[in-house]
Image (tube, rainbow, N blue to C red; front, side, top):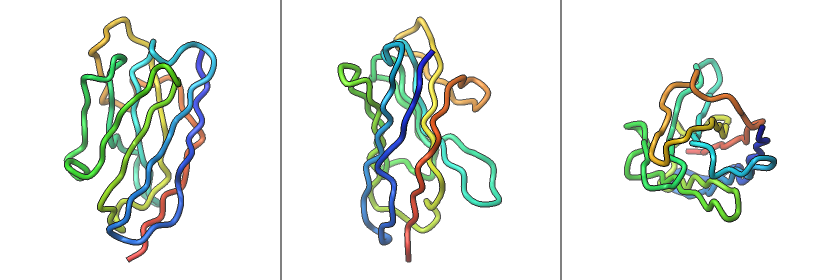
Length: 127
């Protein structure tokens, strides 16, 4: 069992940057593959980025490649999403998610693979 809490959202102008954090409590986060999802109004929740337990395998959806970076600090039980060159279409509620895996390199790209979810943090990018 793990509890996830996102922070770092806010309002930023297009071209700006934000860093989201996801703090995990309970069972150590190093046992979990992690992902960042987002959901814009009227749209389905989509995977933005994912990272394996040990941090050396990552995945990015095409629309954020080269702009967003996912990373983790297992000593701090925290996963980050650095978002640069933000665009108005990045506006959404961003969610952190986790699921356990024995493999240090496995990443999950399906929303149904994730068991644990945070409450979300709003990111608004103005034009």
